[in-house]
Image 1 (cartoon, each protein chain N blue to C red):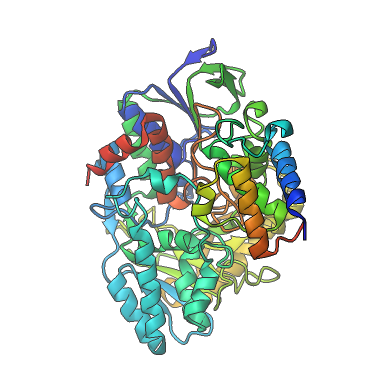
Image 2: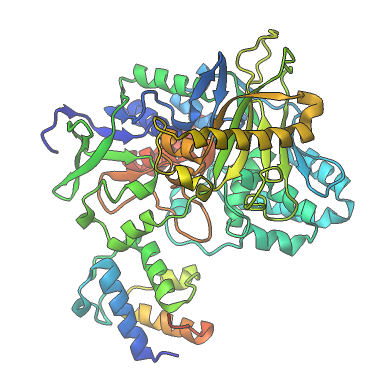
Length: 89
Length: 505
């Protein structure tokens, strides 16, 4: 199973590639909407990209809606990795 | 905006029911609208065509949601379309006759919950609990859908992330192990073209519920709907350009500025609604304004099945009076779209209907054509993919004859007692759908609304560029009309538009 640090790196890598974001800007405290310029139209694609990268299902609407910053996203995925086992693809 | 040869407020691309609805709604609200259609005649899959004097419907056979207070009737009232149509409800003795393999008698799927429940309980007496659970489930799901519960606002339904629902197959297996009952309950999947394994239960419910509440036909079929819309559009001053195609959407200062047509005309506008298949969008828009992953998602959307279609008339002078039954042959279990993918068509799902129910009293009713439809797969026509309607090889005709022969034989076996032999006047294949309806892979219902993927919504990252059509919100005539409503609503302000429409209840 990947470490938490590997997971964080992989999230940054995935979003950088699929959304053409600057990896340097994706600091833990950066907000997805205001700082990184993602918006509600990107939500579906973000879920799809992360599900594919980590082989997990992000289907819990409430925990997704609670995500504000990169760190929230890391924490959510780390939690899911614990529950779903997160096979690396 | 750009300097164009022409200028308008909104360009609507594609004149199927989505485009017609969006254009009519915008024109009603005073927007200057230009509707652009690739082929010579507007109407998309709603158009009729003629063979030997008989008119045939392609995409409109019967519909739900046209009763008083139901969404399509309300929308058509709001647009002024309904007054121009003669809509007929299937009488209580009308139904879908489901001939399910392994079932001793046909299941009469009536178009109301009470009769349907009674019939299912009669045929599957030990499955009472499953039947009740299923019908309650469908109704409950649709109570939360604004198009069925018009008191609800639209935005919460359209926006945001939804919980992953169960598949239709998972759900049906959880309530019954009877393969004939499973097939009877899954039968509406024929009307959205997704395998029960991949179909989301709410999508199934939203299609099924419409028919469980009532079924309707329209005198003159889909063509009458097209003509009614065109009259409404003409009165509102909307322009319809046929035989022209938009090749590029232009942007300036971060929003839509116009479109370019295949004749190199530039039409300046601030809004564009595209109703075609989303896979064509990436080649049409400035890619740099979209996320790569989004464009990839559009291009990789998996499609619904295609169809083989046989357009026929009864042999001799035997012209049946209006028949309020639609006939289905279905395999048992949950493979109703896919089973017998290999080999003979004879045992594949098959539907037979005669959409024109107007009784003119004439034995020579010129519109009472009979249509047979069977699911088809794009790969089956592979050897003809490179051909166009103008240069199909001789083997194509032979293939069509073979397909028609198998479907007609199956129909004769199932329903010959009533209809006798049928004489085919035209045959459609996945290639026909692709070439006539601009449907990639001949998909009958656009991109799948399935658990395998996320269909795009009306809103896109490019301000002023909106998606509509049956690959977006929902499939079928109702789904596509509502997709038109939503795309125009997004331009006009969604909840206000919704409020105005539902005041026509």
